[in-house]
Amino acid sequence: MASVAGWAAASTSGAFPPLPRAVVQAFYRRMRAVAPAAVGAIERDRATDPEQAFSDTACGRLVGSLDDAGLRALGMWTHHWCMRFYDDDTRVGRRLVREIAARPGLGWTADEVRWMLRESFSAGPAAADRFTLPRAAAGQLPPAARPALACWPEVEVPRQRRPEGSR
Image 1 (tube, rainbow, N blue to C red):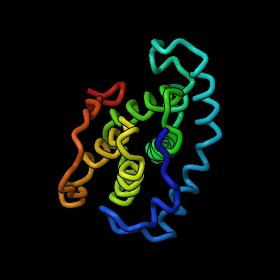
Image 2: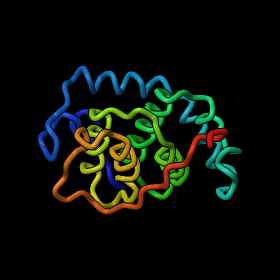
Image 3: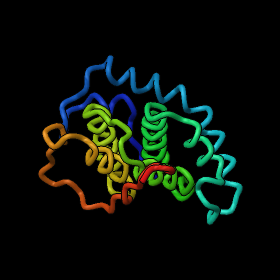
Image 4: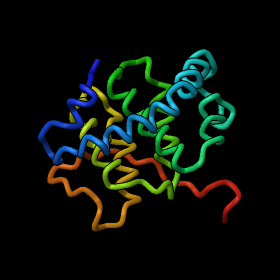
């Protein structure tokens, strides 16, 4: 099992300069707002058929109930949870991360992307899906705001889907 140290991972030197404490605290505050619903949805989905259509799962219903800011917070919380507790039991969380990564136009900020990347690098290679969401989110940033990494890991980014009802 790989683990990151939460605040310590966000505030230590490495590939990215540390984010200001107030910025990281704002991320944690937003994530805490969605965490109870996320934990409940993940627990309910663990007991169901893993082949069930995402929209029919508790996580799918939660995603459908949130606006873009809520989805970003949910994505960040789920990414954080998966990086801290990565093992075979994170299957539902990893699916949730992939589903959020496939949603275009969530309005990710460069700070959110840097925070997720820092957590991903801290988790190490045991967490195979660790770059899925940060890479997809970075792809939604304007080119000038995208983090430049000399050794950006190769990961498969879920194909961005159009929101339902749009053409």
